[in-house]
Length: 403
Image 1 (cartoon, helix red, strand yellow):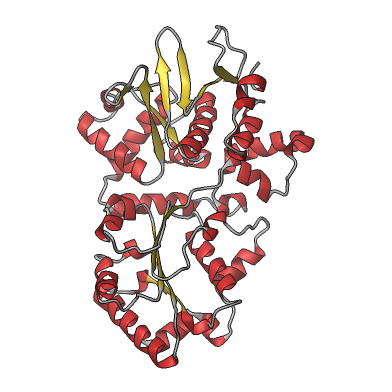
Image 2 (cartoon, rainbow, N blue to C red; image 1 turned 30 degrees about the horizontal axis):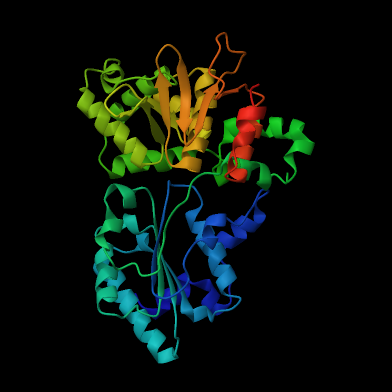
C-alpha cells in the first residue's frame, strides 16, 4: 500500500466521482446531516464521530469532503476505510507515507478521515504516535466508528491529545428532522400530513435507508454483526430481547427479565442490556422521587421505533402499541435534556426530564394527574415532539398540550 492506494480510494485526487455521493444523489429523500457542521476543521483537531451502524456516518463524511473540495486542494483530503487493513501497523505506514507526500507537495494542512476505525484492532496505535511526535500538528483527523468506540473506551486513550477536536454522536433522525426531509417547514399548516408522516415514522424510524424504502436486512444484520463482533451469544441476545420487548413499557427489574429466559442469571441479563445500551439500541429511565433510584425497577425504551420492530421480529416477541409511543417520547426527551426518569407512587408518570413531566396516553386518561403533568394523546404526540426541538422555551407544553 502507498500513494497509489490513496489515489485509488480517494477518487477526487483524479477528478473522479465518489460512489457514496453518487448513491446519495439518487435517493428520493436526501439531506446534508447537520452534524457535519459540528466537526472541527481547525488544526490541530482529532474528532470522533460515533453512532450506531447504518446511520449514515460514511455518507455524511463524503458530503463534508465534497464541500471541502470547493476550497481545498484534492490531495490535502484523505479518506481511508480502515476495514481494508490487516493490522494497525499497515495503517500507520500508509499515514507516514502520506505525510511524507504532503511535505513534498507543499501541502500545509491536510484533512484525514479514518472511517470505521473500530474494525481494526488497536487502530489508535497508528494515530497516537503521530500525534505525540508532532507530525499531525497542522492537520485535522476525524475518526468514525460504531458504538465500539464507546464500548471499548477508545476515545479515552487520547487524553489531552484531541486539540480542538470534538466528539459527536450521530443518531437516527428525530421526528422533527424526519418531517423536514419530507419537505414540510410550517407544520401547523400541514398538520394532517404531519399526522400521516408520524404513522410512517413509527414504521420506518429515522435511518436513511429505511426512510428511502431500502431493504431493512442491512440494518438488522449490522446490529447482529456487532453482537458477533463482541462475542455475545445470539441465543441469549434473543431471549433477553424477547423478554424485554414483551414487558415494555412497564417498569421492570433485571430479575424479572431473567425469569422469562432459559435460566440465565440476572447478572447475565444486566450485562446484555448494558451492551445493547452501548450499541444505541435501548435507553434506560430510572425511578426518580426525592432522589434517583438506580437499583429499583427501570423503564427500558428503544432509541428508534424501527429498532423496536426489527428486534421484535428477530426475537419472535410481541409488544403492546403503547410501548412504541412511549419509547419515542422517552428518546426525544432524552436527546433534549440528556436525562430521562419516571415516577411511581399512587400514580405513575411515564417520563420526567428537565422540568417536564409527561404521561403518554393513547386514549383519554381515567384518572386525574397534577396540573404540571403534560398528558399526551396519540394526536398530540407529533406536535409535542416537533416543539420539543424548536427552542428551550417549553412552557407551551404545560399550557397547550393535553389540556
